[in-house]
Amino acid sequence: MSNYVMSDVHGQYKSYMKMLKKIDLKAEDTLYVLGDAIDRGPDGIKILSDIMKRPNVELILGNHELLMLDALKNFDEIKSKDRHDTDDIDLWLDPCNGGEYTYDNYVKLSAQKRKAIIQYLENAWIIKKIKVGNKNYHLSHAYTTLRKSKEGFRYGDLSHDEIWDIVWMNIFDRAFIRENAEKLYPNKKAIYICGHTFTQRLDCIDDLGRGLVYHNTDYHGYHVYNIDCGMALNNKSSQLACMRLEDGEIMYVPLESRTK
Ligand SMILES: [Mn+2]
Image (cartoon, rainbow, N blue to C red):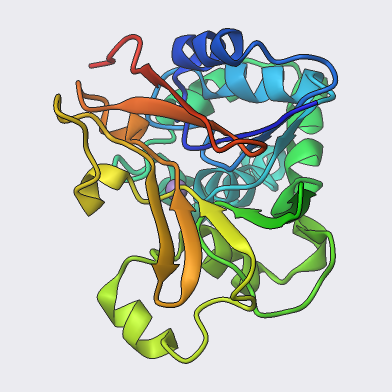
């Protein structure tokens, strides 16, 4: 029985499937996907659908799933009433956020499937806390909240503003660190695993220039992993990483097929 984490698959279904094969995910294992399964790459909906049908895969929301939720929650109403309050959709589909493929594939789905996806996202984790061996892991897309909880928080447990910070914050940003130096995280003993900021940006690369998992046991006094190895970059440095929490083993799958 193993626990795995991966993050920021960004619509790269082939690489995702290759990784599932590589880790040989068993029914008794659990895989936590730390957000941004969708967008930029072409097959976000395919990945989401796969996650939804696997009882041993848990999605923790990323900023891209939040953008999608905000954009689509009132989608049918906006469409049928010819409303013009489409800011959320515009933000998601803006090239800087890359929601287009996901949107195009979403609108082709049946109403029932669309509803199931929205409901799934509205029930997803924002922060998940798990204990593996004697270590406490805090899993989230980007950051945290200083609010206390034993198990973590789901979408419905937090305000939109709180969720926004948890899924969007760049914890490696100097101004952010300066402002929060007093207390960056709630617990010095927990191990914080996030994605969101590709590790290439932190100069975490191998000899071939490919992204590697960032691991720092003393990041301003905290124990932090960043496992986003740059699938969003869509270039030859892009890798998908997956870590097994039991022994810290990290597996990599280079980006399988680049999109235009
Ligand atoms: Mn992100």
